[in-house]
Amino acid sequence: MMLRLAPFACLLALAACNGGADTSEQANIAAIENQAGLDGPIVELPEEGGSEAELVGENAEAPTSAATDKWVGKWVGVEGLVLDIAPDAAKGPGAYRLTMQYTLDDKGVFEGTATPEGIAFSRPDGDHVLRATDGDATGLKYLAGKTDCLTVMQGEGYCRG
Image (cartoon, rainbow, N blue to C red; front, top):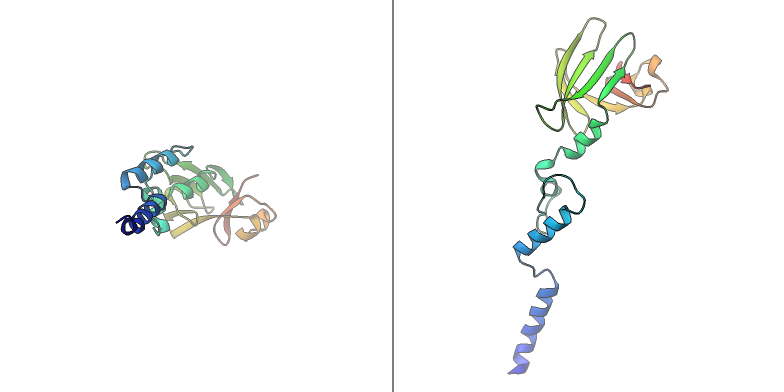
């Protein structure tokens, strides 16, 4: 009789050592790990084999907006062109207000949204994405050689310092 139970005892021992924890125990472990220095809500991790999208959850824009939050402030272009980026607290993380003088004759305030590529926005001349570049990438001789710049399109860019 004892010999018949030995394989089952081994299987039970393996299950206990090999992820045999129940779902509530996994949730508790995830909660403790999330509280170990991370800001924001506790995120329950998916089972093994989950996709990257599942790992990010509802906070998909957090990493993107953290990068673009560094862009808040004044940026200077050529011939009086200027860009001022401010967070739009009313709309939440990853939302911005772009105040721009973008041609000699055109200016306005536009809503921007953080994306993996930069800050997406629309203005009368179309949809655009503000991207981090250097001065050479703007295509503007006055900005050439600068290292901290944002480019809307070839011929339109803004730099700091």
